[in-house]
Image (cartoon, rainbow, N blue to C red):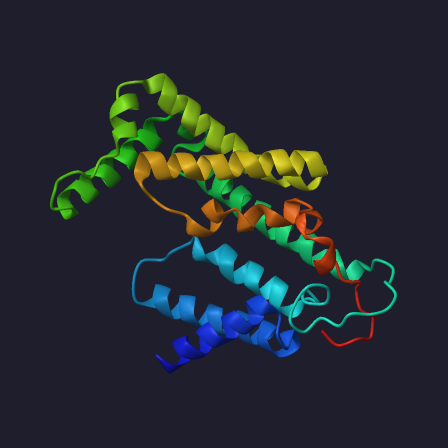
Length: 236
């Protein structure tokens, strides 16, 4: 409980960018500990992996140099540096690798390419719906979306093939910026579909934060927040 409270404090300081050189790595380590401990006593929540990895990347990189409580306002801006580009590229690489690994796991399974037929996906949704119907007192475990597509094998095939191609082609998002943004929208839409059909919420992915490094979100900041970057040797 004490570590959880400390983690909340470190997360708040990390989010605000206060003393980032200390709170950034501290937040990353405490988040790793908290989620590892949680998974040790329950089912493995693989959707936590990206949260931990992205938190570690942001925590150890100079991500609080420009806009944060600890940022220093200089009289003249400095030239762009690779130090501020590699965390974004690494975060994107980690993201697409997790999706690509999901595709590899499907292809290396008993069905192989036959997973794209949709039968395995339909069976998985059916088992999940039965389990939820048994656990939910009202018996309303199945999503209305499942009822609409239950007897439409062509739709299951389309969903399975689309998700497999999306995951297998994830590394292509690193090749071109516009392709990466299009892939991000498609991946986010897939999680919306998972939420609608299976009622499984991937909070981090649905929030859009997962795909933020693919976009130039700093352009949305008001001019007053667009502070010049500190010199290479300046403290974060």
